[in-house]
Image (cartoon, rainbow, N blue to C red):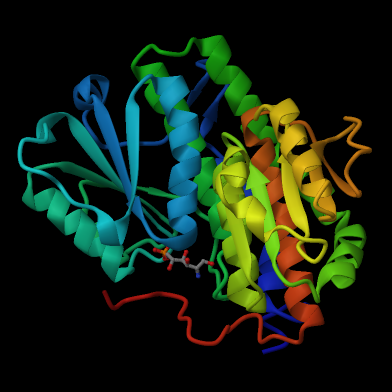
Length: 365
Ligand code: AGP
Protein backbone atom coordinates (compact mmCIF):
# COMPACT_ATOMS: atom_id res chain seq x y z
CA UNK A 1 0.00 0.00 0.00
CA UNK A 2 0.98 3.64 -0.40
CA UNK A 3 0.87 3.98 3.40
CA UNK A 4 3.33 1.09 3.78
CA UNK A 5 5.68 2.88 1.44
CA UNK A 6 5.53 6.07 3.55
CA UNK A 7 5.34 8.35 0.51
CA UNK A 8 7.96 6.51 -1.55
CA UNK A 9 7.06 5.08 -4.98
CA UNK A 10 8.59 1.72 -4.10
CA UNK A 11 9.58 -0.24 -1.01
CA UNK A 12 13.10 -0.46 -2.40
CA UNK A 13 13.38 3.33 -2.41
CA UNK A 14 11.99 3.52 1.12
CA UNK A 15 14.40 0.85 2.31
CA UNK A 16 17.40 2.55 0.69
CA UNK A 17 16.45 5.69 2.60
CA UNK A 18 15.96 3.77 5.85
CA UNK A 19 19.61 2.75 5.92
CA UNK A 20 20.93 5.36 8.37
CA UNK A 21 18.22 4.28 10.84
CA UNK A 22 18.78 0.58 10.16
CA UNK A 23 22.49 1.03 10.77
CA UNK A 24 21.93 2.88 14.03
CA UNK A 25 19.81 -0.08 15.17
CA UNK A 26 22.53 -2.55 14.14
CA UNK A 27 25.18 -0.62 16.07
CA UNK A 28 23.21 0.59 19.09
CA UNK A 29 24.43 -0.87 22.38
CA UNK A 30 27.10 -2.89 20.62
CA UNK A 31 30.07 -0.54 20.87
CA UNK A 32 32.24 -0.58 23.99
CA UNK A 33 34.57 2.39 23.54
CA UNK A 34 36.57 1.84 26.68
CA UNK A 35 37.44 -1.73 25.81
CA UNK A 36 37.81 -0.95 22.10
CA UNK A 37 35.53 -3.88 21.56
CA UNK A 38 32.11 -4.83 20.25
CA UNK A 39 29.59 -6.14 22.81
CA UNK A 40 27.64 -8.79 20.98
CA UNK A 41 26.36 -11.31 23.56
CA UNK A 42 27.90 -14.18 21.64
CA UNK A 43 27.04 -17.52 23.26
CA UNK A 44 29.76 -19.51 21.49
CA UNK A 45 32.53 -20.53 23.85
CA UNK A 46 35.42 -18.00 24.06
CA UNK A 47 37.97 -20.81 24.23
CA UNK A 48 36.58 -22.28 21.00
CA UNK A 49 36.65 -18.93 19.20
CA UNK A 50 40.23 -18.38 20.37
CA UNK A 51 41.46 -21.66 18.92
CA UNK A 52 39.55 -22.06 15.63
CA UNK A 53 41.82 -21.93 12.63
CA UNK A 54 39.32 -21.46 9.85
CA UNK A 55 35.99 -19.78 9.19
CA UNK A 56 33.65 -20.92 6.43
CA UNK A 57 30.93 -18.56 5.25
CA UNK A 58 28.01 -19.97 3.24
CA UNK A 59 25.38 -17.71 1.69
CA UNK A 60 23.49 -16.86 -1.51
CA UNK A 61 23.14 -13.77 -3.68
CA UNK A 62 23.53 -10.49 -1.85
CA UNK A 63 24.26 -12.29 1.41
CA UNK A 64 27.14 -14.07 -0.36
CA UNK A 65 28.53 -10.66 -1.31
CA UNK A 66 28.28 -9.60 2.34
CA UNK A 67 30.24 -12.77 3.14
CA UNK A 68 32.94 -11.82 0.63
CA UNK A 69 33.19 -8.37 2.21
CA UNK A 70 33.44 -10.02 5.64
CA UNK A 71 36.35 -12.16 4.46
CA UNK A 72 38.25 -9.00 3.48
CA UNK A 73 37.55 -7.57 6.96
CA UNK A 74 38.16 -10.69 9.05
CA UNK A 75 41.34 -12.09 7.48
CA UNK A 76 43.60 -9.09 8.23
CA UNK A 77 41.98 -8.22 11.58
CA UNK A 78 41.71 -11.71 13.00
CA UNK A 79 44.59 -13.38 11.19
CA UNK A 80 42.51 -16.41 10.28
CA UNK A 81 41.68 -17.84 6.91
CA UNK A 82 38.10 -17.37 5.72
CA UNK A 83 36.57 -19.43 2.95
CA UNK A 84 33.41 -18.01 1.38
CA UNK A 85 31.18 -20.39 -0.59
CA UNK A 86 27.91 -20.04 -2.38
CA UNK A 87 25.65 -22.08 -0.11
CA UNK A 88 24.51 -24.25 -3.03
CA UNK A 89 28.16 -25.19 -3.65
CA UNK A 90 29.23 -25.69 -0.04
CA UNK A 91 30.74 -29.10 0.65
CA UNK A 92 32.74 -30.54 3.49
CA UNK A 93 35.46 -32.94 2.40
CA UNK A 94 36.56 -35.98 4.38
CA UNK A 95 39.64 -35.14 6.36
CA UNK A 96 38.70 -31.51 6.95
CA UNK A 97 39.50 -30.43 10.50
CA UNK A 98 35.92 -29.92 11.57
CA UNK A 99 36.73 -29.33 15.26
CA UNK A 100 38.55 -26.07 14.60
CA UNK A 101 36.20 -24.56 12.03
CA UNK A 102 33.32 -22.15 12.57
CA UNK A 103 30.68 -22.19 9.83
CA UNK A 104 28.79 -18.92 9.40
CA UNK A 105 25.55 -18.69 7.43
CA UNK A 106 24.66 -15.20 6.26
CA UNK A 107 20.97 -14.96 5.41
CA UNK A 108 18.61 -12.03 5.63
CA UNK A 109 15.47 -14.16 5.75
CA UNK A 110 16.87 -17.13 7.64
CA UNK A 111 14.70 -19.28 5.34
CA UNK A 112 16.82 -19.73 2.19
CA UNK A 113 16.77 -23.44 1.32
CA UNK A 114 20.30 -23.54 -0.10
CA UNK A 115 21.73 -21.88 3.02
CA UNK A 116 19.78 -24.13 5.38
CA UNK A 117 21.00 -27.22 3.59
CA UNK A 118 24.63 -25.98 3.71
CA UNK A 119 24.27 -25.54 7.48
CA UNK A 120 22.77 -29.01 7.79
CA UNK A 121 25.76 -30.48 5.92
CA UNK A 122 28.13 -28.60 8.24
CA UNK A 123 26.31 -29.85 11.34
CA UNK A 124 26.26 -33.41 10.04
CA UNK A 125 30.04 -33.31 9.83
CA UNK A 126 30.29 -32.05 13.41
CA UNK A 127 31.03 -28.38 12.86
CA UNK A 128 29.92 -25.47 15.04
CA UNK A 129 27.46 -23.22 13.23
CA UNK A 130 26.55 -19.56 13.51
CA UNK A 131 23.97 -17.43 11.68
CA UNK A 132 24.00 -13.75 10.81
CA UNK A 133 20.37 -12.95 10.06
CA UNK A 134 17.66 -10.32 10.14
CA UNK A 135 14.88 -12.63 11.22
CA UNK A 136 14.35 -13.54 14.85
CA UNK A 137 12.70 -16.96 15.12
CA UNK A 138 13.57 -17.95 11.54
CA UNK A 139 14.35 -21.58 10.68
CA UNK A 140 18.08 -20.97 10.63
CA UNK A 141 18.11 -19.56 14.16
CA UNK A 142 16.58 -22.81 15.41
CA UNK A 143 19.24 -24.93 13.74
CA UNK A 144 22.52 -23.13 14.45
CA UNK A 145 24.51 -23.03 17.69
CA UNK A 146 24.22 -19.25 17.95
CA UNK A 147 22.92 -16.24 15.98
CA UNK A 148 23.80 -12.59 15.51
CA UNK A 149 20.89 -10.37 14.49
CA UNK A 150 21.44 -7.52 12.08
CA UNK A 151 18.38 -5.57 13.29
CA UNK A 152 17.65 -3.94 9.92
CA UNK A 153 13.87 -4.08 10.32
CA UNK A 154 11.57 -5.74 7.76
CA UNK A 155 12.65 -5.61 4.12
CA UNK A 156 9.83 -5.96 1.57
CA UNK A 157 11.51 -5.17 -1.77
CA UNK A 158 12.89 -8.28 -3.46
CA UNK A 159 16.19 -6.43 -3.92
CA UNK A 160 18.17 -6.57 -0.68
CA UNK A 161 19.48 -3.11 0.22
CA UNK A 162 19.40 -2.18 3.89
CA UNK A 163 19.99 -5.78 4.90
CA UNK A 164 23.25 -5.87 2.89
CA UNK A 165 24.74 -2.85 4.67
CA UNK A 166 23.48 -4.12 8.02
CA UNK A 167 24.95 -7.59 7.39
CA UNK A 168 28.36 -6.15 6.58
CA UNK A 169 28.13 -3.88 9.63
CA UNK A 170 27.24 -6.78 11.94
CA UNK A 171 30.10 -8.79 10.45
CA UNK A 172 32.48 -5.85 10.97
CA UNK A 173 31.45 -5.83 14.64
CA UNK A 174 32.01 -9.59 14.75
CA UNK A 175 35.46 -9.19 13.16
CA UNK A 176 36.35 -6.63 15.85
CA UNK A 177 35.07 -8.96 18.56
CA UNK A 178 37.10 -11.91 17.25
CA UNK A 179 40.23 -9.76 16.81
CA UNK A 180 40.02 -8.52 20.40
CA UNK A 181 39.28 -11.99 21.75
CA UNK A 182 42.25 -13.51 19.93
CA UNK A 183 44.56 -10.56 20.63
CA UNK A 184 45.25 -9.82 16.96
CA UNK A 185 44.13 -6.21 17.37
CA UNK A 186 44.74 -3.83 20.28
CA UNK A 187 42.08 -1.83 22.12
CA UNK A 188 43.20 1.24 20.13
CA UNK A 189 42.87 -0.56 16.82
CA UNK A 190 39.48 -1.88 17.91
CA UNK A 191 38.39 1.64 18.85
CA UNK A 192 39.46 2.93 15.39
CA UNK A 193 37.33 0.34 13.60
CA UNK A 194 34.38 1.02 15.90
CA UNK A 195 34.73 4.73 15.19
CA UNK A 196 34.40 4.04 11.45
CA UNK A 197 31.37 1.85 12.17
CA UNK A 198 29.84 4.67 14.20
CA UNK A 199 30.34 7.11 11.30
CA UNK A 200 28.50 4.84 8.87
CA UNK A 201 24.94 6.20 9.32
CA UNK A 202 25.99 9.78 8.61
CA UNK A 203 28.26 8.76 5.71
CA UNK A 204 25.33 6.86 4.17
CA UNK A 205 23.11 9.90 4.73
CA UNK A 206 25.63 12.03 2.82
CA UNK A 207 25.18 9.72 -0.19
CA UNK A 208 21.38 9.83 0.09
CA UNK A 209 21.64 13.62 0.01
CA UNK A 210 23.32 13.32 -3.43
CA UNK A 211 20.44 11.38 -4.95
CA UNK A 212 19.64 14.07 -7.55
CA UNK A 213 23.11 13.74 -9.14
CA UNK A 214 22.87 9.94 -9.15
CA UNK A 215 19.38 10.05 -10.67
CA UNK A 216 20.65 12.30 -13.51
CA UNK A 217 23.46 9.85 -14.27
CA UNK A 218 21.02 6.94 -14.24
CA UNK A 219 18.73 8.78 -16.68
CA UNK A 220 21.68 9.63 -18.95
CA UNK A 221 22.84 6.00 -19.21
CA UNK A 222 19.64 3.98 -18.76
CA UNK A 223 19.60 2.82 -22.41
CA UNK A 224 23.17 1.47 -22.37
CA UNK A 225 23.98 -1.91 -23.86
CA UNK A 226 25.54 -3.20 -20.62
CA UNK A 227 27.01 -1.91 -17.36
CA UNK A 228 30.30 -2.99 -15.81
CA UNK A 229 31.41 -2.48 -12.21
CA UNK A 230 35.06 -2.78 -11.20
CA UNK A 231 36.82 -2.65 -7.85
CA UNK A 232 39.65 -4.18 -5.83
CA UNK A 233 39.93 -5.57 -2.32
CA UNK A 234 36.97 -4.54 -0.22
CA UNK A 235 35.37 -2.96 -3.28
CA UNK A 236 35.37 -6.15 -5.33
CA UNK A 237 32.39 -7.73 -3.51
CA UNK A 238 30.63 -4.38 -3.82
CA UNK A 239 31.24 -4.43 -7.59
CA UNK A 240 29.56 -7.87 -7.70
CA UNK A 241 26.72 -6.68 -5.49
CA UNK A 242 26.09 -3.49 -7.50
CA UNK A 243 25.90 -5.51 -10.72
CA UNK A 244 23.48 -8.02 -9.16
CA UNK A 245 21.24 -5.20 -7.93
CA UNK A 246 21.13 -3.55 -11.35
CA UNK A 247 20.44 -6.75 -13.30
CA UNK A 248 17.84 -7.95 -10.82
CA UNK A 249 15.60 -4.88 -10.98
CA UNK A 250 16.32 -3.38 -14.44
CA UNK A 251 16.92 -6.60 -16.46
CA UNK A 252 19.89 -4.82 -18.02
CA UNK A 253 23.08 -6.78 -18.59
CA UNK A 254 25.38 -5.91 -15.70
CA UNK A 255 28.60 -7.59 -14.54
CA UNK A 256 30.98 -6.95 -11.68
CA UNK A 257 34.68 -7.74 -12.04
CA UNK A 258 37.82 -7.52 -9.98
CA UNK A 259 39.46 -4.54 -11.67
CA UNK A 260 42.64 -6.52 -12.33
CA UNK A 261 40.71 -9.15 -14.26
CA UNK A 262 39.47 -6.76 -16.96
CA UNK A 263 42.45 -7.36 -19.21
CA UNK A 264 42.03 -11.13 -18.85
CA UNK A 265 38.80 -11.16 -20.85
CA UNK A 266 36.00 -8.74 -19.97
CA UNK A 267 37.79 -5.85 -21.69
CA UNK A 268 36.64 -7.39 -24.98
CA UNK A 269 33.06 -6.39 -24.07
CA UNK A 270 33.88 -2.74 -23.43
CA UNK A 271 32.61 -0.17 -25.96
CA UNK A 272 31.30 3.40 -25.93
CA UNK A 273 27.89 1.90 -25.05
CA UNK A 274 29.03 0.20 -21.84
CA UNK A 275 29.38 2.56 -18.89
CA UNK A 276 31.99 1.41 -16.38
CA UNK A 277 31.39 2.20 -12.70
CA UNK A 278 34.75 2.15 -10.95
CA UNK A 279 35.48 2.10 -7.22
CA UNK A 280 38.48 4.34 -6.53
CA UNK A 281 38.32 4.19 -2.73
CA UNK A 282 41.56 4.83 -0.87
CA UNK A 283 41.46 1.45 0.86
CA UNK A 284 41.71 -0.51 -2.39
CA UNK A 285 44.79 0.46 -4.43
CA UNK A 286 43.19 3.41 -6.25
CA UNK A 287 46.28 3.98 -8.47
CA UNK A 288 45.94 0.53 -9.99
CA UNK A 289 42.23 0.97 -10.57
CA UNK A 290 42.98 4.34 -12.17
CA UNK A 291 45.05 2.47 -14.77
CA UNK A 292 42.08 0.18 -15.42
CA UNK A 293 39.89 3.26 -15.84
CA UNK A 294 42.31 4.55 -18.48
CA UNK A 295 42.16 1.18 -20.27
CA UNK A 296 38.38 1.34 -20.60
CA UNK A 297 38.36 5.05 -21.43
CA UNK A 298 40.71 4.43 -24.33
CA UNK A 299 38.01 2.05 -25.70
CA UNK A 300 35.52 4.91 -25.45
CA UNK A 301 33.62 3.73 -22.35
CA UNK A 302 32.10 6.47 -20.18
CA UNK A 303 33.42 6.06 -16.62
CA UNK A 304 31.56 6.92 -13.44
CA UNK A 305 34.16 6.97 -10.66
CA UNK A 306 33.21 6.41 -7.02
CA UNK A 307 35.99 8.30 -5.36
CA UNK A 308 37.05 9.34 -1.89
CA UNK A 309 35.70 12.81 -1.25
CA UNK A 310 38.25 15.44 -2.30
CA UNK A 311 40.43 13.14 -4.41
CA UNK A 312 41.13 14.47 -7.90
CA UNK A 313 39.50 11.98 -10.23
CA UNK A 314 39.01 14.48 -13.05
CA UNK A 315 40.05 11.81 -15.56
CA UNK A 316 36.72 10.09 -14.97
CA UNK A 317 33.86 11.40 -17.10
CA UNK A 318 31.73 11.62 -13.94
CA UNK A 319 32.61 11.34 -10.26
CA UNK A 320 30.41 10.52 -7.28
CA UNK A 321 32.09 11.66 -4.05
CA UNK A 322 32.18 9.10 -1.24
CA UNK A 323 32.99 10.20 2.33
CA UNK A 324 36.35 8.81 3.47
CA UNK A 325 35.69 5.88 5.79
CA UNK A 326 38.58 3.42 5.72
CA UNK A 327 37.49 -0.20 5.41
CA UNK A 328 33.83 0.77 5.24
CA UNK A 329 34.12 3.25 2.38
CA UNK A 330 33.15 0.68 -0.29
CA UNK A 331 30.03 -0.12 1.75
CA UNK A 332 29.05 3.54 1.60
CA UNK A 333 29.80 3.61 -2.14
CA UNK A 334 27.42 0.66 -2.51
CA UNK A 335 24.56 2.90 -1.40
CA UNK A 336 25.25 5.25 -4.32
CA UNK A 337 24.94 2.28 -6.66
CA UNK A 338 21.73 1.06 -5.03
CA UNK A 339 20.30 4.46 -5.98
CA UNK A 340 21.83 4.16 -9.47
CA UNK A 341 20.22 0.73 -9.98
CA UNK A 342 16.90 2.00 -8.65
CA UNK A 343 16.79 5.00 -10.98
CA UNK A 344 17.90 3.05 -14.07
CA UNK A 345 15.11 0.53 -13.39
CA UNK A 346 12.62 3.33 -12.73
CA UNK A 347 13.54 5.05 -16.02
CA UNK A 348 12.84 1.72 -17.73
CA UNK A 349 9.47 1.39 -15.97
CA UNK A 350 10.32 -1.93 -14.32
CA UNK A 351 8.24 -3.43 -11.47
CA UNK A 352 11.05 -2.68 -9.03
CA UNK A 353 9.71 -4.31 -5.87
CA UNK A 354 8.75 -7.55 -7.62
CA UNK A 355 11.07 -8.32 -10.52
CA UNK A 356 9.96 -11.10 -12.87
CA UNK A 357 10.96 -14.67 -11.94
CA UNK A 358 12.27 -13.75 -8.47
CA UNK A 359 11.02 -14.31 -4.92
CA UNK A 360 12.03 -12.43 -1.79
CA UNK A 361 12.85 -15.61 0.02
CA UNK A 362 14.01 -18.61 -2.01
CA UNK A 363 12.70 -21.56 -0.02
CA UNK A 364 13.29 -24.20 -2.68
CA UNK A 365 16.71 -25.72 -3.32
C1 AGP B 1 19.19 -9.85 -3.40
O1 AGP B 1 18.82 -8.64 -3.94
C2 AGP B 1 18.45 -11.03 -3.83
N1 AGP B 1 17.05 -10.86 -3.83
C3 AGP B 1 18.97 -12.40 -3.39
O2 AGP B 1 20.22 -12.54 -4.01
C4 AGP B 1 19.11 -12.72 -1.89
O3 AGP B 1 20.12 -11.95 -1.32
C5 AGP B 1 19.37 -14.22 -1.73
O4 AGP B 1 18.27 -14.95 -2.23
C6 AGP B 1 19.67 -14.63 -0.31
O5 AGP B 1 18.60 -14.39 0.56
P1 AGP B 1 18.77 -14.48 2.12
O6 AGP B 1 19.73 -13.42 2.54
O7 AGP B 1 17.40 -14.28 2.68
O8 AGP B 1 19.31 -15.84 2.43
